[in-house]
Image (tube, rainbow, N blue to C red; front, side, top):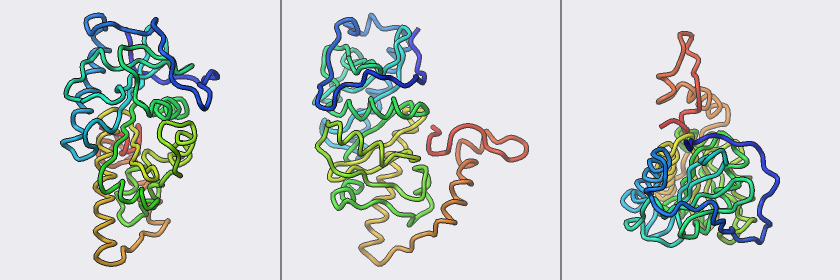
Length: 270
């Protein structure tokens, strides 16, 4: 049975200018040929993709999602296709992409942003899911190439003292992927200059929730800038918040008797 899992480092990355190559051996022709676990995972990706518009995270066919997945012992990812109306998506439309070399199977091409999905999942074994979107307020900051500073303690949900904005590069390129990885170092989310945002999580729902949280914070920050000068929390306070977040939200339910949190940071919790 196919199951989500982490994977080792891989040495056969696509060349910087390469396009993802289809591999017929990786193609599942219809939903009927998928095992129950993979079918459920594909359905979950579609359900979250269909929430992008109503939630305000993306309009039309923009935005994309992926989920770490292993099929028959082959580590890879499931990813939404390029330029397809999410309302029309069926489970068999999603591509399965191999982590080792980026080769993929499916009837439709994977998202044009497949490269940073692939590279993030390779570099960050704790990440299980990725949401990329173009929400209004986060993108408004991104087009100014501005990070989200520690104006509110909830910025720590993204894993650090701020939420960085990755340097600009053309969409779908190896350069953009490298810039995103740099901005995501020790973080769960980042903005992409003149583009949008990326949110990651230990579960698909966690990544989606974090994307919503980043957009809410961006809106609050823009409103604060429009009405005055936001007061930025000092680094030592944010460090205390980051420690406290080990016991925040879902992690509070996993604390042992001594109060030590167990498991992933709150931002990665469902």
